[in-house]
Length: 346
Ligand SMILES: [Zn+2]
Ligand SMILES: [Zn+2]
Image 1: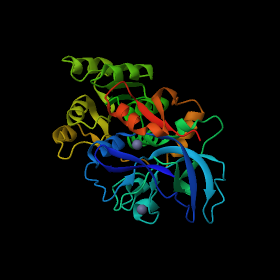
Image 2: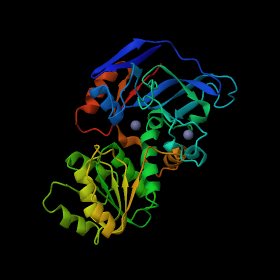
Image 3: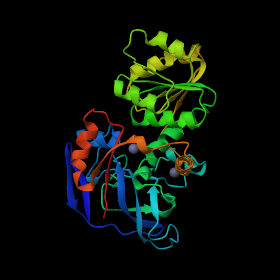
């Protein structure tokens, strides 16, 4: 089969590789749609992602949906021909965190298309992928593969909102209007936030947020930013999501939070980022990490089916499978992009 192997920085090659066979409990999925994530861009640009350094070439990608084409031993569902989205988290299922249902924190986690483990785990930028049957979620009729490939980042957003302890009736600030920030906005609105404000340096991100239902936006570089925030949420925001992965955004978000607020860290900050500890202390803030997601894949499907979340505007551009390198250049280009995907029609 054809697959994209990452050999190093800026070196992603479409190659012929051995087609995988589904093992016991696994299915073989023909990949129909796959998304490009910030972490994929990091791997592509640097040949690594933070501390995750691949020890051999591997297949990138972890956001995908496709058709089940073969079953391994002991699998009776999903059936051959089923349209599925795949939760890319393969946790051990045995450790304390897994047994408590917090499998996103499993120390043995093998995520698709990730060099967090040695050797690196292959991902979904391929014609076929094997996946545990238990990780496959059937897509209802009319649910497009492209939306299926959005379920992973939307699950990250929904997990973040759930980590906040609830946004219903509250004033919410999201720092960073990238893909995850925009998805947190959709989920926070669907979960009944009183108002959601998005802060971003880019005019495109602010305008997009307003189209997605933000009640206001902030430009963090604006000299009047703090005064505007006070107008939008008198007394401060009750819930803040830091989705930019930028220390200055965290500091600003904490400065704009109300006493007693909850701050959720969903963006990945550079190592060594200063955290305004005395503000956490004197405002009695809850500062929660939100790492990947657990137990929300099906919930996101339901929210889309019920019409509470509309995924359609999030997909900016779709390239054919053969043009992944072009798609990555577009996604990395800093243009007016929310999500770039590739699709495989045959
Ligand atoms: Zn992702
Ligand atoms: Zn585990």
